[in-house]
Length: 138
Image (cartoon, rainbow, N blue to C red; front, top):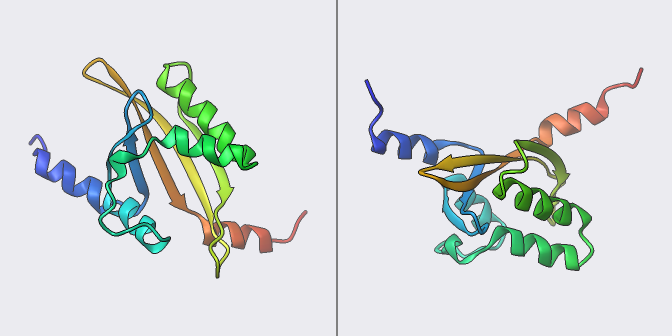
């Protein structure tokens, strides 16, 4: 049985990982509920239209403020969207005002109907990271 488009959309929306798909220019073209929920929990208006945002531009603005990781992501994203980079995964801190948080970010190239896209995933790995830091060394 081939899955229906409705099943595919429902599955995408049910993922706990924050996922967005970017077009060849790094504009956000679609995202899942977890992406929306994280944005809302961190100050974004609940009805934000993420299509107004260019992910690479946001990274470059953060890089201008001294965020070297954001510059690495902007460069990796550019390479991915040009077809010069395969899947890449990064770990990074993303602390909130009241808690330490860590995420794993994956950038995955996607070709669909002759066009290039990138899938951006952010997965909360805070509990795993904190347990790893508590493990004895050696």
